[in-house]
Image 1: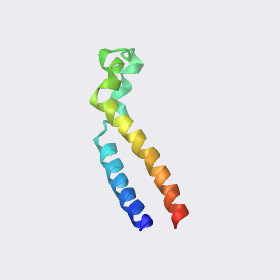
Image 2 (image 1 turned 120 degrees about the vertical axis):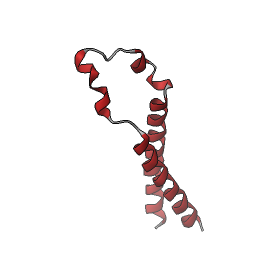
Image 3 (image 1 turned 30 degrees about the horizontal axis):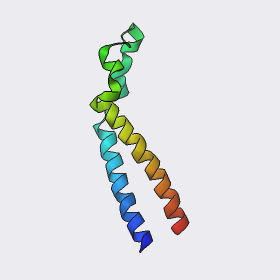
Image 4 (image 1 turned 90 degrees about the vertical axis):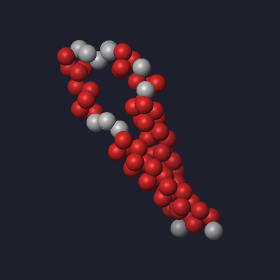
Length: 76
């Protein structure tokens, strides 16, 4: 029973992680740092923007992915 519940949560986390990664912009948009444009308003307020939230959600989902993977490995 526990193994089934953890597996379902694992599948949900995998799908959510894939969707969040696909929603993020590419890092090639940040090439303005070469010309000295790195300290713009958008780079300073990145943590409060949608892109900043997506990065935080990606980090949380990636950590939960690893933890659930270890739990499933132990339960298997």
